Length: 173
Image 1 (cartoon, one colour):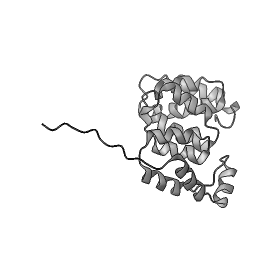
Image 2 (cartoon, one colour):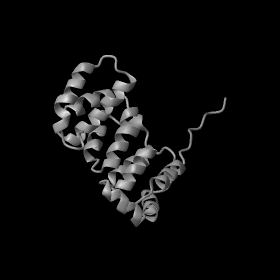
Image 3 (tube, helix red, strand yellow):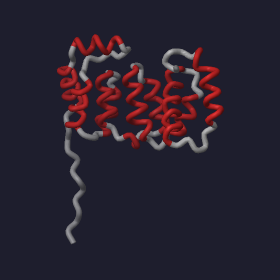
């Protein structure tokens, strides 16, 4: 029986090549629109998604892109990562680093919701004093209520929403 050879991992583009491609996608008009929404990048999301589709899943590249602290690179990282490969603490750190609304939303919706630590993070984040972090917890709670409400104290959740949300910071509302 012939010995099985390990699968070859295709070598993808370097970080510098991907960052150069992202820079080439920068559009001042898109940046102006995004800045009105609190985001600081000028890459059209359709073009960003096309780049992610071409790159496919690359967890190592995703981590490297995230580490750049560049918004467009972080959005791309969230599209090419493997959501289940992140640990609880790593996701918590990433959420606290996500300084723009789009990165925050994509992290929660594209990565955390698909991660085995989502429920544990939902509970921790909902009680967090930082309104941006708490908003991630509430986004996960909304997902939980609609998909799997068993075990949740729905009347208590409704009481919390009614008593606390009207005075909460905008991002938390």
